[in-house]
Length: 157
Image (tube, rainbow, N blue to C red; front, side, top):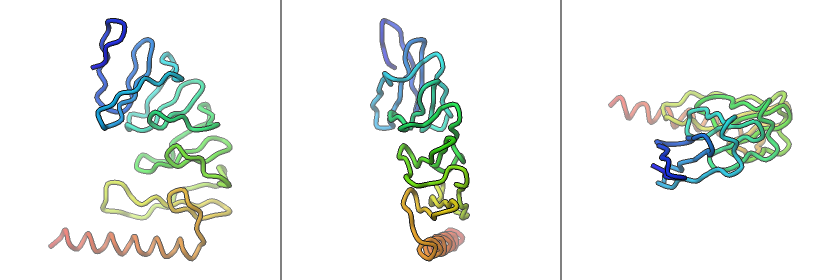
């Protein structure tokens, strides 16, 4: 519970708001008032990570630099990539030189709750937000597939 001006607001995780404020609970027991967030237009994606209002996009308590909330979207619920009409983000970090128009997630099946984050665009391959060569990318993907198979076989035993 947060008390402000005599009123209480319950913050279970992620984002919450009342008539005047938007709050972010950071999963370490700390709640922060997002002073730049506009409560009346704020929307959470209900994933504990992303939200936006009429002026800004938020990853937790951080604003995604230059993100346009009118065109911004998260690309997939289990991945931390998001885009607007001109830019690509990983968590709250802008991926410089990424092409928003051709950017896409490369899905590698995973038995883990959060899959390894791979993506590509017309110019580059990415592991998280790091550019890598096509050879490195293929190697990383093959290693991830092998790790998943090994973990899967241990679970079945």
